[in-house]
Length: 325
Length: 284
Image (cartoon, rainbow over the protein chains, first blue to last red):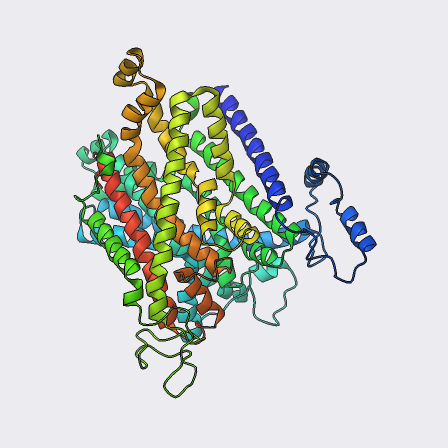
């Protein structure tokens, strides 16, 4: 019963945060200096035409009224119309979401598989020469600007060696019958490799350091000592007893990592001309396409907020002490 | 009691971090003397040709020149100024705001705590880099946008941690004793709470330096930076936009990245030193 109340209040909190972020976004985009329609209105329009346009977008009404129209539209899934493309923002943003999610999840899966294995290994070989070099090295990968790493990989593997394409999701002229055919094609995978590698190198530090420190904690616990006393081999102790228990918190960090990664994607998508939400946000902001910028921002925020919720729920599920208290 | 004011000199990694900082501070102070050219001056060779895209060591250019004929080495040297300026101010602001919010929420509790922690929840729901992009686009281009955005959002981590630390302090016997003997809240906070949370503030501050420098680099790279200040992020944006990648001009875009890594990881190394002061039992 208590667990259900805890989950319920956490879900309510998520709804509150969503509302707050949506409101901040509204104020941010409405209170900025300049006419929001400046990019849309042709200088040749007559004042009457301009007024008609303002009325069409509801910009002639008082701010609070605009706010409720905006909230109502959001609930209906209407994010407005892009100034630049003249198409519904929701359509465009939803079309780009898969590209961003594919990039995020594939890079994190690579990062987590590597990080968990390497972290367990480093905990096992604690105090060795390898460990003394590896830990500062991992900290260094966390200190890299992601886009710079992308530039390096691009310059080396694409422009110097010519092994990989320089950007995009497909070769020029390549046509696919469906999104499914595109995403499973060799061409797409070749384009995906460098951005995934960039993000994975940056992200592996979190699971690696977390796994390592959890392993060090778990290995001190009684049941591990017990396993040792029983005469189990060190490998068996590490894998079957310590690693399994150390793994749970690392898994909950995956959801948090998705949220962080999707924000960081902005720069990496730009470097690799990857048509995702982040790159679209940058382009929309540069072009003063406010509805589109707002929509892309909102979509990223929703992923972040839902992932925070998922992390908390997973944490409560895996560690009953949290909900039992 | 003043452990937080001590620099972590016992840890080799932390010492390396401090050494890196000292190096960059010296470079930043003496930038005009160290740089061989003005960072934005368009340079020409002796035969009056634009000195564009020259390789390192060509003539007087230690690290080569940019496409527009600017000296890479001099830009790199001047870049240390904006990096340190942004990094240190942002770290100070984030640590200060986070500590104040954390202490106030944890010490007073009740509705104050509820409001502040719901604010932190909201801050956690805002994607940071996209937020900085939107803010930087709306405000005048300036290096302070990054600091401003960090002040608005990134106090969240520091705030939460310092709040829970303050909660444990609030019920300690000596705080109780001070309260019974009639000390004011302000006095208790300043004398008994602040000294104990200071190492945590320093820990989060030293991480925030790195965040600020990385964020500034990303923002400049995306073209929302201050065009009048030379930063490492600006150099990378210039290189990317000038096709330095396909020209294989590694001498142009590798050094700024290496400088960013050095100074950001120095912050991480120092923060690990503070962790060892704070949690001596961990010692990893």
